[in-house]
Image 1 (tube, rainbow, N blue to C red):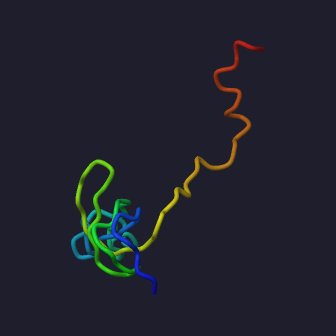
Image 2: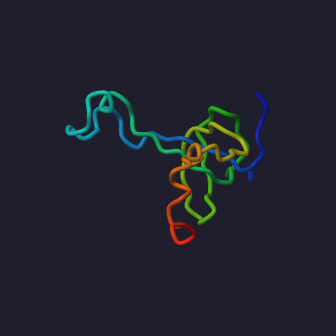
Length: 94
């Protein structure tokens, strides 16, 4: 594995709540999985993917977790266009 240099933009993950710590009111399938946090930040020291590392976020928070991604990108969207929604707010044009 290649070493990633300190200062590189990376993504870490850490377990916020283990399955045993989850609230008793959550659905059973949810109770069986850990509650995981993913955070992007600048790597504090050289490391490899899979290492436990420290990062500094854009706003200056220092967090630690397992290094999972180098130069992460955004992959979310607001889904496919819904043509019916495009008409909302344009009633005045009709």
